[in-house]
Length: 291
Length: 134
Ligand code: SF4
Ligand code: SF4
Image (cartoon, rainbow over all chains, first blue to last red; front, side):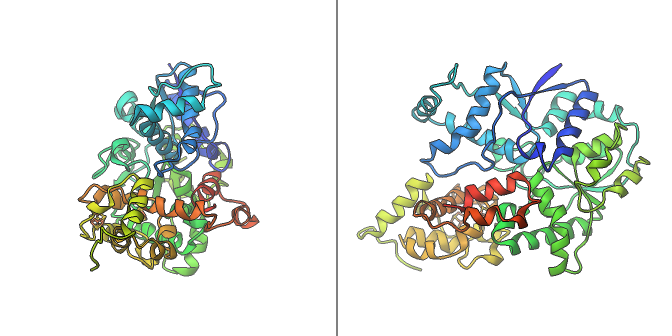
C-alpha cells in the first residue's frame, strides 16, 4: 500500500539519515511512502498569537496539497513538523470565521482547504496500523538487550490533544525498543525540553538541558538515546562537544533516530554515511546487533 | 502582592495581553505550578508566576523589560499543568509578539546566518528566526 509522506526541510538536509531510514523501514514493512508533491517548509513553530493568520498558511498549504493529492493520511516523522501541522489544523478548525479567512488567503489554489487530512506520526502508525508484533517479526538482528532511553521531548506529547501517546506516561517508544530486542529504560527527563531554538539565543539554557537530560538517562542506565526530532538530536548529540566544557562530568552517549535503530535491528543495512551525521559515534549500538 | 486595579489604565494593558494571547490571564490564582514546571527557570530574571501577576496588574513595561519571555522555549510544560487551564506559553508568545512588532527582536537575522551556525539544522535556524527576530 502507499501512504503520503511529508519529509520537511531538515530531513532533506542535516537529517538525511532520518529520511532514508524512514523510507527503508516502511518499505520493508510493506508500506510504500509517496512523498507529497510541492511541499513547503511547515514554518517549524506553531504561531501562538491569536491574530497571526498569515503565519498559519505555510503549514496549512501543505495540508491542502495533501488533500489535492488524495487526502486521507499524511505521515510526518519530524516532531517539529508533526506538531506544527497538527496545531495549525486545529487552530483553523476552531472557528468558521477564521477558517473562511484562511480559505480566502489561498484563493488561487485549484481547490479550497477542507482540513480533513489526518496527520500521523510514524510511531503511532507503527503501533496502530502496522502493529509492533509485526515489527518484532521483522527483526533479524535483535539488539542484545542493549539499554536504551526513549527521549520524547515536548512536541510529540504537548499539547495533549495531539500527543502520539498518553502524555502523562508515554510508552510507545519504549514498546518499540522492546520489540527490537533492546531493553527500554525510563528516565525522569524523557519529556522535558532540550532547549530548542535557545541554542542560538540563550545558549546556556541548551547546554544545561543537554547535560541534565543525558545525566538523567545515564543514571537510569541508558547507553544511547532515541529521538524523532532533528532539533533534539542536534542539541543532545552535536552539542555534547560544547556542553562537556561547562559540565566535565557530562555523560556522553550516542543519539539515534528511532528509524535508524529499526534499520539496524531489521538488518536493512546501516549506511556508512549516516555515521558522519552523528557527533557521538553510534557504533556501540551497531555492535550490540552484531551489525 | 499588588491589588488588581480595574479603574485605571492597567486593565486595558491586561486586556491587550489577553486579546493577543487568547488566554484569560485574570483567571491565574498565583499557585506557582508554572514556575515549578519550567525547565528554563534558572535563566529567567522574572519567574513565570510573577510574570503572570505583573500582566494581571497591567505592568507590561516591567514584563517587556525582563528576559523571561525570551528565555522561554515554548515547551508547554507550564501550559499542560496550570490548574486554571491557562496556556501560559501563549502569554509568553504574546509578550514576544509585542516586542517583535515594535521591531525589538532578541536576535538579528544576521546573527542567525552567522557561519558559526553552519552545521545547524534548518529547523533550528528557521525556528530561531520565527521566534526571536522582529
Ligand atoms: S500555574 Fe496557572 S494559575 Fe498557577 S500561577 Fe501559573 S498561570 Fe497562575
Ligand atoms: S513554555 Fe516557557 S515558561 Fe512554560 S515551562 Fe516551557 S519554557 Fe517555561
